[in-house]
Image (cartoon, rainbow, N blue to C red):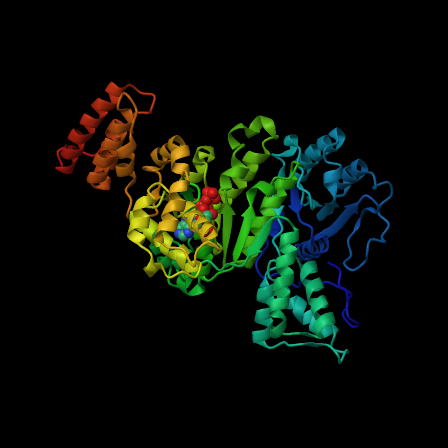
Length: 598
Ligand SMILES: Nc1ncnc2c1ncn2[C@@H]1O[C@H](COP(=O)(O)OP(=O)(O)OP(=O)(O)O)[C@@H](O)[C@H]1O
Ligand SMILES: [Mg+2]
């Protein structure tokens, strides 16, 4: 985006004064990490921050570029410095660092271009060893994360966070100061206006924010609360263009989702839980949910409606698109996306069909140099450790593809299984979609419709109504129950064509997930269709039932003695014995006749 800057607005970026809390880079420099890799597009901002850090630690700051060589960094001098003799050669420059004795920070810009060279790799490794006993740090600064395997143990990757509110606030102040002489431009510095402007801009880099503010000043001659919507929509565009995330405008509400009552009430209880007030009350910010289940049953719909219910903006992350062809870039992409989400928090981050991007994880070691598993590791670690109010709504269809790590406790608050709708839920869904198309649901026999559509998903119910409308259009005044029934009957639902895969999903879901709906019982519905010859499945379901019937602590104790239920491949006989043992043991434990297992 290139906005012509209005007169009086200098192009200097905000210069950070002493930073309030030590940044991750400062901590690592203090701790004498020899080699850091800082990933960012914001070169100038990073250099300025490093300059401040170096000054505070009484160190000099040097920077190296291929055209300048190695030279003392002085802020504001735009690259027309002549570096030390001969140091344009990256190898010479690295060796020079070893010989320079003074405590310093050396920043090598765009070093991803040279890092794959075998001499450079070797020199960097030697350098890492040499620097361990010195007071100097080498920082590789680049928008592209590229680290050869041999260097992985020597180099520490540091994310350079997007500017926080404080930094943006400084920028607004700076702009206000810069245009003070220009009577045709105005920046409203009232607390209210500043808050609105910054809320709208947060998530952008400093450069991007400056450009957006400049453009606003050019077009509106002012920067105040009334311009916040424009700034916000500029931000939406910038974020979308970066190809990682997209702001979605949501109209869907939870009332528009049929059934799924357990899920809805869970979300209802989390309302307000991301506010600072809840933090003060001692509540941790919720992490988020993983929705798995059958296609077309409302996972994506529920994810969108949740953002609306929680009253936060919705950012959608397309995992599939994150995987760019270039190894290294993908990891940067994901880090960047997560940083944007953190910067704009509180926000709902919707990761739709998370398994699509991660499906290579199991085999990734050989196929793509491990990028997929590293990216996945980044997401997992982030999910586990994030403290910011980013509520993650992840959805997945193909649970077989989900690596088991993602299901472990602490990643998501809950994993919900979204099954085919039960009869009362289908009634709801018919009512919702008839209503959405301007028909009064009361004039339809909803009970009958719900009965006729056993095994149909929400999406298929919606489709049947649309088809009935098409058929009636021009042929009769309006649709009636019978038209919808006929449309339903003409369809073959997925639950028939994909019977086995739905069955497998349900089997998988038991014990791993919570049912999103209280009106359907997974075990019951599985028992109805359970069909294997030697009765293994039936025994497994029997076991689930028995386990549900005893208190959790008893089940836990019994399983400590017996281990978990035998694997699918085990003998049917072994399962039979396990079942018997389980019941007997559970009873004894419940009566306190058995001491706790060690
Ligand atoms: N429970 C429901 N209540 C109301 N409408 C529903 C429901 N389930 C599905 N629909 C309708 O079907 C459409 C498709 O559903 P959605 O995209 O949410 O399914 P999904 O579970 O995400 O499927 P997929 O796994 O294929 O992505 C929705 O936009 C909605 O119109
Ligand atoms: Mg979906």
